[in-house]
Length: 132
Image 1 (spheres, rainbow, N blue to C red):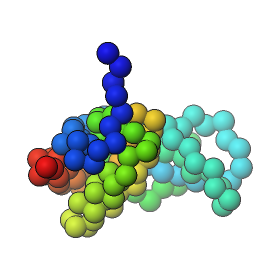
Image 2 (cartoon, one colour):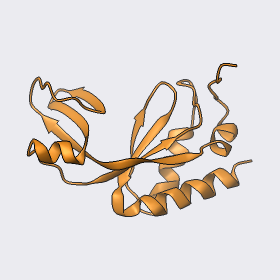
Image 3 (cartoon, one colour):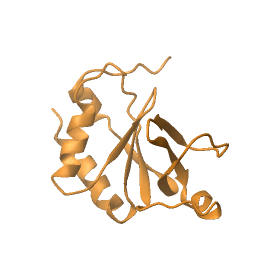
Image 4 (spheres, one colour):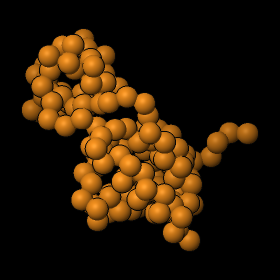
């Protein structure tokens, strides 16, 4: 059976099932084209933003300001779902946890400072448990 993408916010929140991806991650920016393989890439007028594993950024001597943990919300969220990003961001914001969201086709991914990953996971568990 095909995994169906959810749009109902209550269902999405109940099924968050966040998982921490192994590793340490950073966001860097480059000017122009780069052959560097990235886990995520965003083209902006000011340059190209890349999410890399920290060891790769270090190997290429790329500058970054924050080391992130990568949390995947394993619930299969529809691209048409409304409110999931806001609910997650608001929950983390109440604890002053910065959160950068990457939306994939099947799942949403959160980059949070590595030193706050346990707090973020606990907050997401509470959010999921409180969903009606």
